Image 1: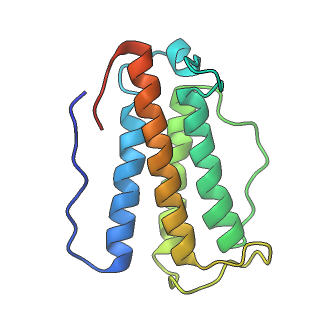
Image 2: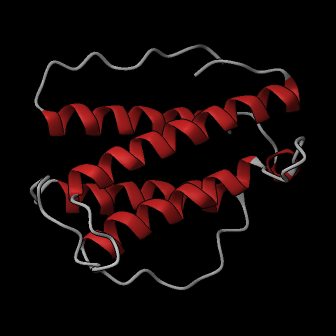
Length: 151
């Protein structure tokens, strides 16, 4: 797995943040290249974290923060996707839904959820740091599973 550098974006705040978020999303997804179902569900760390769990978690995080807390849309109560293919498909579908919300909203708009007193700017920055953190976890898990490295 080769190393991909983050995009160099000379643009406004929205374009820059969304480009960096997409880079982190894709970096996490790349950790699944060549990984079998059993390995994706295996946890080589004491916390029990697996690649599959990370994919399920980031789907939930984007749905919760952007779709539910910011936009007030219902998030279906369903079991997390049980396979890598289903989890990655759900993640990619969530990107599309999130981007459709973000592209028409103002970064200063507050979350509609009164228990989340932050604006869209904070939400996108939080997802960027959350996704980057978990992409880093995926880096470590993948290296422990089979030695593969790279972003």
